[in-house]
Image (tube, rainbow, N blue to C red):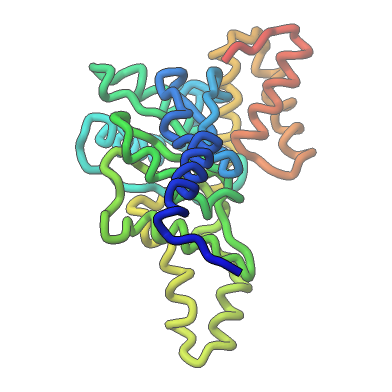
Length: 292
């Protein structure tokens, strides 16, 4: 069997490389960042899909979470205007507006900054695509825009090692985190790991503290920890009242108040999501259109 000299193989290798590059063009050439203010990352295709209409509510409608809302808004505005800001982990009770406040703040900031260069591009990455985070960050780092990267319902289960990609992204490695990127994530878990997973690591390890340090310390890499706790009855009714006033649904308090309380009781849970679901039901019965 004869072998071709290296100098004869080179033209063939060059043609193969050119063909592969034509088949899979660079990601940056596939994305038109002027097409929209929001995008969804697809790890499979390595592209960003523009979202022209984001599913979100006005910031003023998010009642009962004013303290954490204002902290996150200030942090986001700092980032948009070119000043230091922290990655943020929004953790806590379900249905209390963690993802809603992130999307609402993005819209609010873009509506209130004083110049176009301060507007943010919103990019959502799904939990199952976290391992591709370094590729996405490399793509965004090359752009002249500032990005708010968002991952909803972030958590990790047993034998899941994809958290290492997130950890590396938060640490930034030798190059550091791109200056034009800020990461916000939501989770029902404060430490992003299930309690039994952490306890199992402690019980089976030779050095228990070292065994769990890498996993538990993941949350520590978020500069902001914002807790969203179960709302009281007064906060729940405040949320309902805010929706009624915003959408000008004409109904007496004697009618909507007991109905709202019964709605929450039948679901066994009071939250912003429960209040919104009640409003949708009430608006449908009153034949009022809800335009967000």
